[in-house]
Length: 249
Image 1 (tube, rainbow, N blue to C red):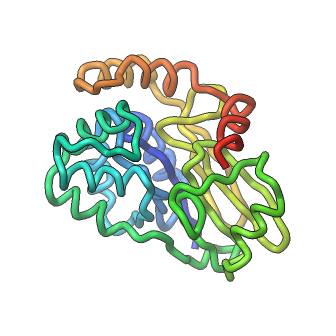
Image 2: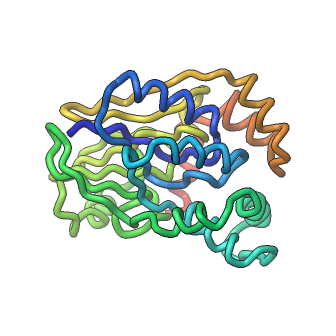
C-alpha cells in the first residue's frame, strides 16, 4: 500500500485543500493524518475537508487534538500547562467545532501501524511512539533518539509535531517527518507532506497565500496577524527552530 502522510494542519484549511488536490492526483490508497489537525484559524472548514474523505483517511492524535478536546469539555477554563495565548487559541477552536467533531478528535489513536510498500510495517505517531509532545529533530542526540526508539519493533517510524521535514537513520530505525501542512518551519512558504511507498517522497505544495490570509483574517481568529505573518508568508527555518526545540529536550 502507498500512503500519503499529512501532519500539523492546525486549522489551515486553504493549505490542506491544496494538498488534498495533489494527493488526489497522486492516486495513493490512504491518507494518514499525524495529528494537530484543527487547532488553528479555520477548524470547521478543515474538518469539512476531512469529513469528505470518509474512510480514505485515518488519524493519530496530536497534543493539539488532545488539548482541543479538553478546551471543549471545560469552556472558559484556563489550562495552566499551556501559555495564555495557546489557551486562547484552543478556546477559539473549541467554540468553532461541534460535539461530533469533538468526539471524532477524542477517538484518534495514539499510534497506528500499517504495512507500507517498500518500507514494511511502519509506525505512525505524532511526537514519538511513546509521547505526543516528545521532540526529535535533525539535531537530537543520537543516543537519546536510540533510547526513544529502542522498544519500537517497527523499523520505520513516522511522526510530526516539530513541523520540520526529517529523514534520519538511528541504528536499525528510520525516522521520518513529512513537515507541516499548515504551519511549516522550513524557512519558506508552502504546505509540506509526504508519500510513502515504495520510496519516501517528501512533497511540497504551493497555494494562494493572499486568499488564505484573507480567509484567516475574516475568521475572527485571535492570533490572525501572527499566523499569517509567521506561517504563511515568512515561516521560520530549521536553523532557528532546531536550536529552540533542542534547548527544551
